[in-house]
Image (cartoon, rainbow, N blue to C red; front, side, top):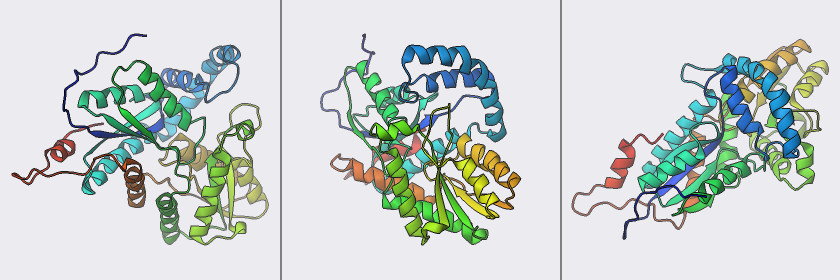
Amino acid sequence: MPFKTEPPYQHGQNASTGVLYCNLGTPEAPNASALRRYLAQFLGDSRVVEIPKALWWLILHGIILRVRPAKSAAKYASIWTEHGSPLRVWTDRQSQLLQTQLLARGHAVSVRYAMTYGQPSIAAQLDAFRAEGISRVLMLPAYPQYSGTTTASVFDNVYRWGLKTRHLPEFRFVNHYHDAPGYIDALASKIRTHWQTHARSQQLVMSFHGVPERTLHLGDPYHCECLKTARLLAQALGLSKEDYKVTFQSRFGKAKWLEPYTEPTLVALAQAGIHSVDVVCPGFTGDCLETLEEIGMEGRAAFMKAGGRTFNYIECLNDHPAWIEAMTDLCEQHLQGWPTLIKQDPQTGEASRVRALAMGAKN
């Protein structure tokens, strides 16, 4: 396997640090051709679908990629913004605010964002870091709860990039932060703010992205981490066990996934006489198709059709100040030991590295 051409090594070059904030990915446009490319990459990942590769290739390319792209494109079109995919918009925004906050706290760190599937790719952003002279990289997934289907795929992309790279930077990886105080506090703050503006509903539903149940039995910690996040969030909000429910959404295929499922739960609540619900998606750090369309539209429609009266979807953390602070806290925790603190020039009193970072458009 040939190595890529890299910037020439410079003796005595100062070590510099980057943070790569990684999200799942998004199609480039809300049309069938873009969805076909995106789904082929996403569903072609053996981390996402654990079916024997030859069999799954036939199903994916023979059936799914012929039928699903047009249906998915229509859903994406319903939430697409003038700036593009909401997931890309929020991931970009979060990375910029993280850059600003790290600089404000005195850290000379370059921040970029990348997508596991789609653009900008993890490999492309790591190449950009190398061209920039970055020699230390902190990988920060956008997934608070660890799962082999998401977090591990980020790491896989880094390892594949490393196979073609001669001079590897130092790496650190954030596995999870499902119980980080700042993350829990940010979620609680978001919900309290909603309750201050709108009357609190009878039931709070915490909907996490689902995964096949077999992953739990095979050792994936995702289910347990979701439940811990929910428990800590309920404690922060002062809720009793009767005040909230934990559910799992986005089931795909016929296999049994983590239960209870979100939409059937919403229907059951309405049929049981619960006429108002608040729904929040703690596992998503930024709004996307699964929150805006699946919950905000499909979930709402199912609840109202079953007899519900008031359905409130509470937005994801997005650019909430408490979440940006929590992201910065996570980075500071994992950057310890790396010399990132700004050193001012004794003659000018300025920090040239910081000026360059503040002026450069990294994303």
